[in-house]
Amino acid sequence: MVQVTVNVPEDFLENRDTAAFAKQMQLAAAIYWYARGEVSMGKAAQLAGLNRPEFLDILAHEKIDVFQVDFDDLERELTRD
Image (tube, rainbow, N blue to C red; front, side, top):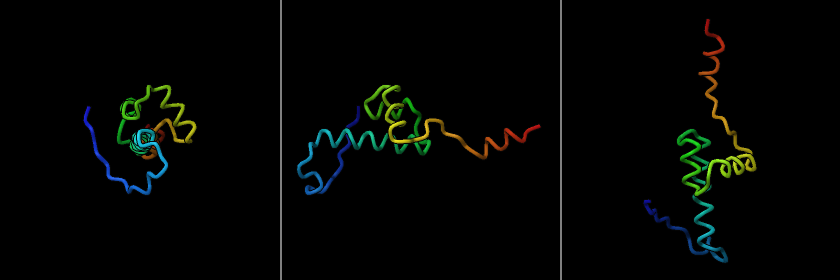
């Protein structure tokens, strides 16, 4: 595992648990990159420190599409002879 250091203004973390904040950042990054199609669901779940069902539950809670659809590809498929 690789460790990454992120600089955050001190006043931003005032009265926050830094370990919980780090986990939230990992989850936010995983959701962001998954929603953009940059990582698979498995890799996103791994980054978030979750298994796939747990990650799916969070995606549903956050109203993030589970299935990534490329509408150009879909249109080509639908118009193929």
